Image (cartoon, rainbow over all chains, first blue to last red; front, side, top):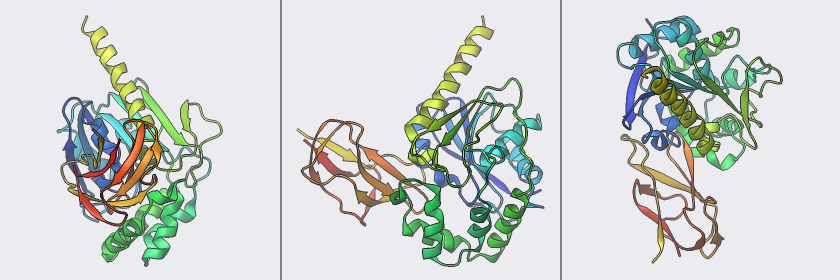
Amino acid sequence: MTDALLHKIGGKGPDILLIHGFGADRFSWLALAPKLFQFGTIWAIEYAAHGAAGNDVGDGSLTDLTAAIEAKVKKKLKSPIIVGHSLGGTLALSLISRGVVVSSGLVLLAPAGLSETLDISFIRKLPEVVDGATAHELLKQLVVRKNLITKRMADAFVETLEDVSRRAALRTISTTLKTAAPPSFPPNVPYTVLWGDSDEILSPPSRLPIEFQLFANVGHLSHVEAVDNVVKAIQTIINQQCGLASVSSK
Amino acid sequence: MGTDILVPQLGNEVTEAEITEWVASAGDHVKSGEVLVVISTTKTALEIESPVDGILSEILVNEGELTEVGSIIGVIQ
């Protein structure tokens, strides 16, 4: 079993689970999470090779990463709304498709696997950076407003890679990610897909059998650059669920 | 009586943030919803918007400085 950790971030009410993207961790949700405290209890998963989780990524596949998330979530959270970013979005779909964790709604932010164009160079380069300046330039590709990525953040990221096991584990995931097929959307679970129109890492899909909202002048991190829009989308899913609960209880 | 600009709550594990950039300058007329300042941790950044229309009369914490969550970093009159 690969590693994963589940963290309670704050708030009160229905469970909302956040799943971060490749190279991020629970703190990547800081701009969004506090704004959700009024709507529910906010939880954040950290999967293997990220944050405080260990570095056992198994074969780095979606299956292995998802199994570890499932083990942490299934007994603790009841029908959470799941918000997944990038790889986290794909893991959210993978988690639901296994049928053990039941979700009451999905909010997917630029989910990996749905775009026709994945910037492989970003995924490949991230585990290889050795200095803050290179990391800073690379990480700035994530956003349109470049002042949202600081040298301090880049230095902190490089510091995490001083752990050779962490670096190796991220490499393993990045290799697997390049070839992973996206899970399909589960029937009977309401979802919304959000994308920045200027995403340099995963460009918005031009044709998909799903609807998605596109945010203008936003890059790969809509939970940082379009926080209020993401909050609104989550609130809409919550309201839909409240409506459904109210109807089904009559 | 001014309106204080505060460093917002960032969850139960984060106690301080860095002032990354003041987008507005002292003396600027600002509108509600306009980004005033970018703050950051070692993991992410967030933009703090003006809660009201007015004039950014004071900047209390300068760029590059660390400040505690909940502290007042500016005032709008």
